[in-house]
Length: 411
Image 1 (cartoon, rainbow, N blue to C red):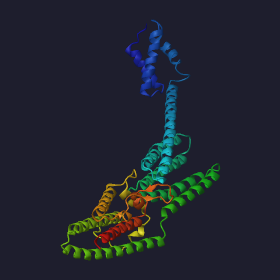
Image 2 (cartoon, rainbow, N blue to C red; image 1 turned 180 degrees about the vertical axis):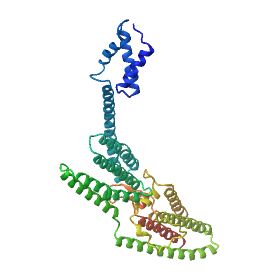
Image 3 (cartoon, helix red, strand yellow; image 1 turned 120 degrees about the horizontal axis):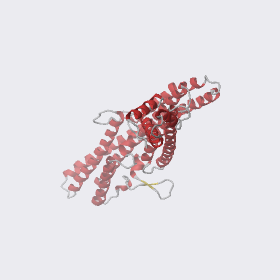
């Protein structure tokens, strides 16, 4: 067995480098294979360089650098198929999650937000980037790659803005308008002027541009939709009427309390407890309304001015939904605490005065209009998927109900 010297090994390595092989791992692998063949087959006294040249020809057709090219192609193809498979899997997962999440949201089932979050995140940060990388590897010109890149970024931005709106996170509307603006003023013009110059793609470019402009216009129209002014005004005045009636009932009850609490009646203790419970629940409802208005309008009011048309933003479903329900559609601690206090108030009225206040302040659920036996929960009926102004009105109605129940007990 022939033993190569250090000088001969160095000679082989330098020759591999001179022949255009730049990958270090490939250089060492070739060196190892060539040295093994030479040591096993070269005999003492044979010409080393001549045998080396014959050995090298076994590895390539013409030059050693061809091996590096073939290696790069194989690695690229391997990565290509891995990326393509990952893209298909992520696309399938995102579409399935979005479909089921949308269906769950329509049916008001728990888990809708989680599925939508999974679908949008997977689509934005896995599927679209992989799609861009695969398309960028195709033999296209720089302008086409630029269009693909801008389109991918726009798609990611649209997905993120949709996620913010679905999850009712701050900044959702801003991101949505930025996405619409980028589509109209950046992506569509870039796509149109890039494709219109090529006679082969001219017709397809015009048709696709028309579809893109139409789709963007529809999205913008949906964004701008809001309840009619008549509905806003009707809701605003209805709430004002409730407030006026509520205040009148509060004043009348206060007058009766003065008479009853000045009396030495044995029921004085129960009357005082009734007043305390009623006032506490009444104030809690007022505080919830105040916090909701301050959060919605980004103000710091200490009292509510009912002459102010805060119902002007009736279209804002998001904040009220986020205020009363978490991402899983479950009531927040604010709503849970409110229901507990309402139930406690109803129980007190039933036990102390033998009156059923559940008929007015009903937390047991409302029968579905379909008459299928399904009960809509108190939380869902009053607060779920309801516009801002409607929720304010519902809370005011509860305050009036408290005063009416209170009046039936002290008159």
